[in-house]
Image 1 (cartoon, helix red, strand yellow):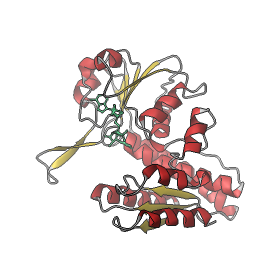
Image 2 (image 1 turned 30 degrees about the horizontal axis):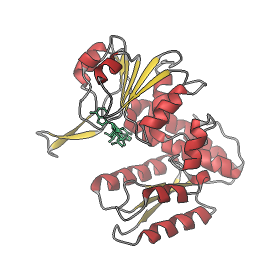
Image 3 (image 1 turned 30 degrees about the vertical axis):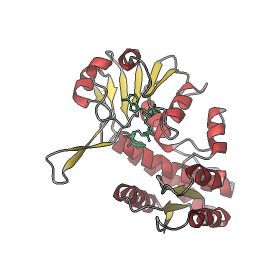
Length: 297
Ligand code: NDP
């Protein structure tokens, strides 16, 4: 029987654990506050931000919702970040990507105070992750680590194949899986669009993390029996539904589940965990700010 890794259920458990930590912080006079900054009118980005706001409300994190006109000068975003950095009531800052073309994305990431960088994308935090001393693990790979642990999948000694080398998923995922620590110790192969004979690599995987953004590009023929499949991809494809589309992953679920020991669904696998780990990082940032020790789930 293939185990379906239920991200919704695990995310609910994480949120429950965070509520306890938030109560402990409240006793110490600290209320976690996350500021989201959106400089876009893209409906998908708007949806992501509003889901993050809702998640905050559910667990008792104060959410500040800052919108900036996408046509405004880049300086307006930089100044907003400076204000949030200086605001002692704000513990976490998230700038929703993508930002408009006239804004320098790297400058945005560097501008956020690393202690409030709950996405974990500031170069200082990237460096700390690579060095094995993470302050904030990026939400998606961290959520995947939790999913694997909850399913009793220990990467130690396993061959892990990560398809995708983005800064937000592929690279930090590969890094976490190779760290000499619990949840790591895998032998990691990172594949990308220039990889020769991708199927030969994916067939060698005990753990496969697909984060390419290419609908159902990995099917059962590219997998070996007993593999654990984590599908990060969220792709809209045309479909005869009310919305005119449906969401599919980077993995062809039906053929992959024939081979897999365990697999994440899309939706309902990695996505909910990504959202939960943002809350986790915000609570962690608050505890660090307040100098209060809390148990994190
Ligand atoms: P990017 O587009 O930034 O990176 C995609 C990576 O996949 C690149 O490294 C690219 O290679 C590689 N790639 C693309 N096509 C192929 C291919 N045919 N064969 C092998 N490698 C390929 O995407 P992200 O990392 O931001 O996101 C990946 C997917 O995950 C998207 O569908 C996104 O929507 C989803 N996502 C889901 C999240 C969740 O919580 N569920 C969170 C974040 C992302 P190269 O570097 O050579 O271009």
